[in-house]
Length: 462
Image 1 (cartoon, rainbow, N blue to C red):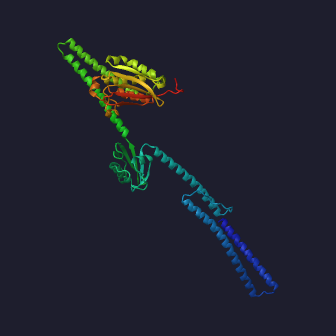
Image 2 (spheres, helix red, strand yellow):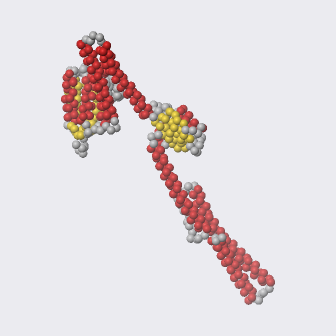
Image 3 (cartoon, rainbow, N blue to C red):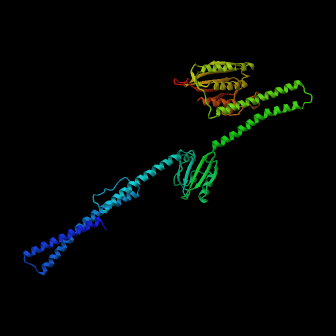
């Protein structure tokens, strides 16, 4: 075996033999000078040579052992550091070309590779944690005993309390359906879906629990609240549209059947019936137009042609366009003034906003006989206002008045031909402009509808 260590040991042995030979030769030379060549002298010389060789061998072996033990100790200490996941240091490689030096080089190379691999794993772990934290769903992993191994930030927020690693999940989430899905995934080793309603009051979650190869389970909570709300809103919308269409259609059908079944038609009666039919047809047409307008402003593709426009011009045009309908029912429509500040506005869309707000006020302004339209600057924005002096709105209606088909007085609204969509259209148009809309009212003191538009900057496109 071509071993550097064996070569060193062989070289040391040869040196020791040479030393012994030299010492023996020196002894016999000294004995020759003293003319002492007896057997006793020979034996004595051999013993002294052997003793000296043993002493020198012990000294050399001790030195060699201590040096070897020191190097092996450094290697052992470094290997223990590697076992403890400390890859920061490196072994000092000696200049010798023996097997221990080669072992030091191999260990240093292995430590460097392990350091790179662990760093890559740590980066991957941080990236995975960041991705899971960025999810909209809550995620938690548990071991086969039901103790938490990991949870993302969303799950921590949904639980409302800290989900501690190493504790059972029931300490943080006590929804029965959630816990049932977790038990099924752990015991039956099959994916399980469920629905939780008590994790957070008022919110609905879909539960997805799947077993992990390690024996634990991964649980995902998906918030269905907005989807459930959208579906409920869609159902309510369809029901409202059906109801709004059924009423005039039933009326039209009834009067048409009466006319067709009349054996001796009376022109005056038929004329009255046809007027009612026309009125209901106009109502259906208005509802259809409002539905199309609402679908347009709610669409993600809804675009506004925003141009800098004086606020005073918007108020003036609104008053001029609605003065005639107001005078027809004996209501004064007054312009209370507006600043000449430029606002970013789509003139056609704002015409819809003012038209719907003023028409809404005309329904309830008969008592006050007056409507005011104006604007003022507030905190870098222009606040527009349409105010009537009618019966006012109860506080219980103020939060919902901009919802689709929401009516304060359903009987009076239908009698006046309202569709219940005008204020919803107003809200979406104002929001598309970057403003906000609200109503201020007290019973017996009228109502003031207000909305804001941002002031046009000097760099705004014309």
